[in-house]
Amino acid sequence: MKTAHDLVLAARAQIEELSPQDAQRWQAATAARVLDVREPDEFAAGHLPGAVNVPRGMLEFRIGELQPDGDAAILLYCKTSGRAALATQSLHSLGYTRLRSVAGGFDQWQADGLSVEKPVLPSFE
Image: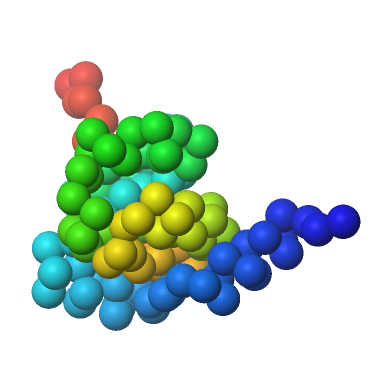
């Protein structure tokens, strides 16, 4: 019987993962839509600039409204890259052609010191 880890490894063999730095350059060069497939609480704690939160479990249901053009560039990420790999593979099976996933996910992006948007908390002073 296969495990979730096996599925992620199989997905990674079929998709293109980019280092956070290469992903940042590719997104800028292609004006790729950035999709965060983490859960809303993870997204609210911090996310890539301009990212749209579409939890992994809702991706296939919402992608048509978010990005109807199957040839548009899309950059996906999650916490460590497993969910994003599966999401990238899934979008490919729906006919999307210009997909990239961030290797190491949000954790690696942050560890590399790249820009992150964090919520602004209200001041009560």
